[in-house]
Image 1 (tube, rainbow, N blue to C red):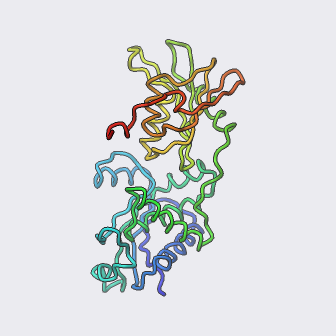
Image 2 (image 1 turned 135 degrees about the horizontal axis):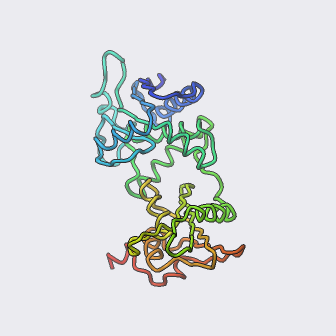
Image 3 (image 1 turned 180 degrees about the horizontal axis):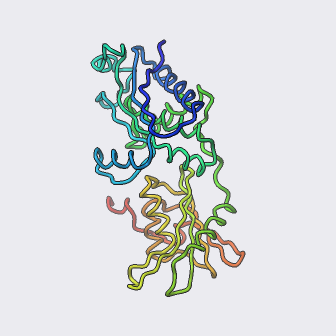
Length: 299
């Protein structure tokens, strides 16, 4: 079977070894999906500013991201490329001799940053982002739980075939999470209370977001460390949380407002607090029993 043709647009320095492995993964996408017709994609490796501008123009989201996909085929509901050969053939290009699946934009700075954050290689992150993007071009999505599982299964099938496992590192141990909370505490802006607080939020995808309390001369505009971490995570697309660690000079469980914000996303998450070398843990549901959340709106 013919491999995936890729029109590379490389706007920032990229390791040739990574490009070679990305090509192998792209070829495998067609094999794993069982696409019988020759296909082509365009892949632009760019910087954060370029992908931010594209995100703003096409999605009205004014921030950078890791990968953007623009399929050329509109697939029927619950159908992907393997079952839509006629639609693929509508995108056949005589000059290339292939069916055009669409465009991908991948941020190289995001490859580097997320590889460091997840604790794996840039090659692994680059290949995963390419595979994730191609899956979108082949009709996969992750809007609801069923679609997400189907897409993840295909991603893992492709990555396994090219000897790159998608599985994230083992769950970050509590000691590291507590250490990151203590580190965040050193960046606290608390000139009025002189009570610094730091937080480290562990997401289910393995990412960790730090936050500190940020005070304001208009006291009501101050923000807690926990909410700083949550808002950072959500603004980067992470909304599923495993645990949060909170560091302060004395034992400090989240305030009521923070408990409510955390409950919006993960009512059963673990909450760890540390102070003066001590550590305690509770479930958020213990701290906010009978909490009001999204499900409450439908009862």
